[in-house]
Length: 142
Image 1 (cartoon, rainbow, N blue to C red):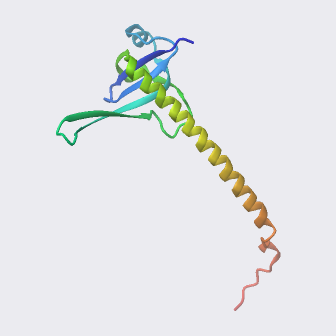
Image 2 (tube, rainbow, N blue to C red):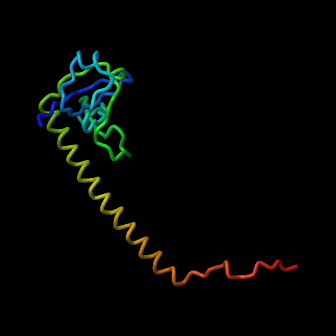
Image 3 (tube, rainbow, N blue to C red):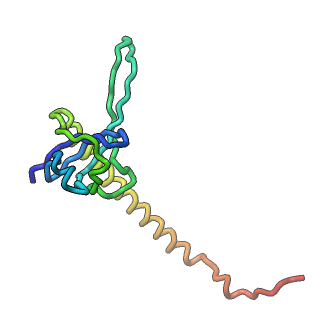
């Protein structure tokens, strides 16, 4: 599969990078209601003065929807303002980030499975000590 790496500026002002199987062109935006994006990542730019007083710009990345397990999204073409090809160094950083996120999610999934297993074992162990209160009388004492 030949992926196209794109930088997309949304009408909301957000900047993202993504990969897509089909190239996104002006014609694509005009002729389609949606485009399919793989692993869309939002860029946040920060500027600050370093210890020498030089202006430094750094960019952080985060998944489009950090709490989602999806990696493929259909985005409305109405939401897109500008599309361009992602530059070489940015493609490398983007791919590194996608790999990092996938590895992080795999670790979290494993930890979640282990936590669930531990909770199930704990629940099974405490079942022997649980008293069924439905067997007791419901007399009201005066």
